[in-house]
Image (cartoon, rainbow, N blue to C red; front, side):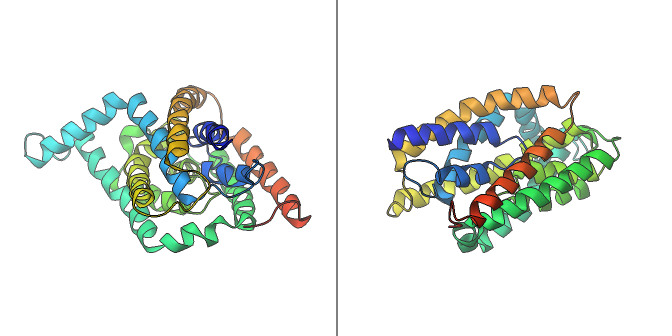
Length: 277
C-alpha cells in the first residue's frame, strides 16, 4: 500500500508543481485522504520535487546549458558580463538568495506550523485572488530577455513565499513577474529556471537528512524514490502543456480552481471532517 500511495502522490506532485496551484498544498491535503491518513511530510515533498526539477533540466536543457556555459565564460573574461546568457546566470543566482536564506532560517516552521491546513486553505484563496488581479491588470510589454537584476531579485523574494504550502512557487514568481510587466510565458519560464537551484538545494538537503536520520514520515526511501521518478515524468508533460497554453490562455482557470479548493478545504476543516495537523 505505501508504494501505491507514493505513486499517487508522485503523480499529483508532477501535475501540480508547475501550475500556479501549489504542489505542496496538494500533497499535504491528499495525505489526509489516503489510507495512511497522514501528512507525507516536508522531507517527502522536498525530495519528490527533485524529480520535477529534473524535468525542467530536460525540457530547457539547451537554454540552461547555454546560460551556464556563458556565465562560466564570463567569469574567465572570455565573454562580457553584459552577455544576455551570462547576465541571466547572475540574475538566477541573485534571485535564489531570498529563498535560500529564508529556508535556512525557517526550517522548524517549514516542518511544523506551515503544515497547518487552515493556513494552506487561506493562502490558496488569498494568493489566488492576487494572481488573478496581477494577470488581469498588469502590463504585458516585457519578455524573457528583458529580465533585469532588480526584477529577478523581486521575483526571487516572491518565490521565497512558496515556503508556505498553498502559495505555489511558480504562482508567486509568476504573480510578481506579471506585476512587473512580463508576459505570461516569460514570467513562467523565469519561474521554472529560478526554481532549479532552490529546489535541488532543498531536495538534496532533505535527502541527506533522510539518509542520516530516522524516518520522519510515513514513506521510506524506496517509496520516495518511486514518487520522485513518477513526478519527473509527469512534470515534463505538464511543462510542455503549460508553455503551449500560455501562448493563448490566461491564469484565470487556475485562479478559480485555487479559490474553490481553498473554500472546500475551509468547509472540511470547519465541520471537523479533517484535522488541521
